[in-house]
Structure formats: structure tokens, C-alpha cells
Image (cartoon, rainbow, N blue to C red; front, side, top):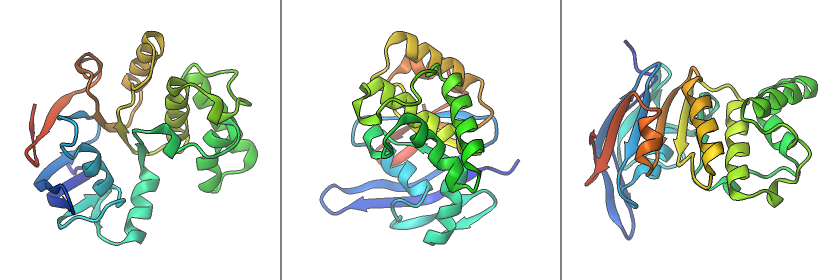
Length: 217
């Protein structure tokens, strides 16, 4: 079986922190939901950034959706197929209203305004966010923003989901709803989370980032 995304010997250094990823290897296959666990500062978010080309590795390579990706044009295509939920929702919300934010991705993919709004409405309903369409995004609570950013990612119908702390700031009911939604999605996923019970309810394989290496958890 061919992996959807593979990291081969990926290394990355920060100027002050030094080496955070040391020849990391990892593959994500269809139908997998894989955890990426580890302590704060271990390099988990950095690893996801490398997979979609937001950071450039010191060495190694990324193979995504059938071919090696090395230049920005390659990663534009990767980012269209790998939906990335950032750790801070404020980094992803930039439209005045919720509906505009969620419809932005489909519009950017060339869909009509009506089709984009329909997709956005359906995704919001799936996440239990009916009635939020005309809400002002910057006035939402942290948990509400978290779900709206996920809706924006899902509206683009990516092949893969890269989820960085998706349950942050969610109350119990919203967290259970999120687990139910993610368990019923077809996409393969890499999930960063510090909540063991959240991962227990979702993942098919667990990995951990320690001392710059990814190991089975």
C-alpha cells in the first residue's frame, strides 16, 4: 500500500533551540488516524509544518500524494489536499462572519458562491454549529473558534487532516461531538493532542516524538 504522506529522514533546527527533529521517518496511510504525542517543545507542530511546506527541512524529504515535494509550487498542491488545523484558531480566521470563513476555501477552489455557501452550511450542521452563520468570528469563544476553524478545513474536502490540538478549549459536550465527527470522517489523520482519553477514542495508531525521533507510543 502506498502512503498518502511520507517523511523520510527529516531534520530541522531552530537558530536558538538547535536541532528539534533528527532524521525523522513517518508514513500516513489511508484509513489511519495516527496520534503524534510528546512534551511541549518536542517539535510536533514543526513536523506538521514541514509536511505542508510551511517550514523547510535542514535535510530529508517529503513525499505526498504520489510524488516528492520540494519547492513551494509542490506544497501549494499538498496544502490543498492536506487540511491543516492550526493550534491557534486566530491564525486561521480572517473573514468577518462564520459563513464567509467556512465558505472561503471552497470559493478559493473555484466553486460558485451558492455552492460554497451550501457546503459551508452542511459542514456547520455536521459540527453542531447551526445558527452561527452570521456570527462575527472574532467575538466567538475559544471553543467556538476551534470548531469554526475545523469547519473551514473540512469544507475544502481534503484527503488528509493534520490536527494540532483539535480539542483545545472545548467543553465536554463539544468534545464528544468532535470525537463523533472525526470517527465518522473518511480522511486519514495525524492528531496532536495532550489528552490521552481524546486520543483513546479516536486513533488507530499511536506515535510519540522524543529527542527528535518519532517512535511507536
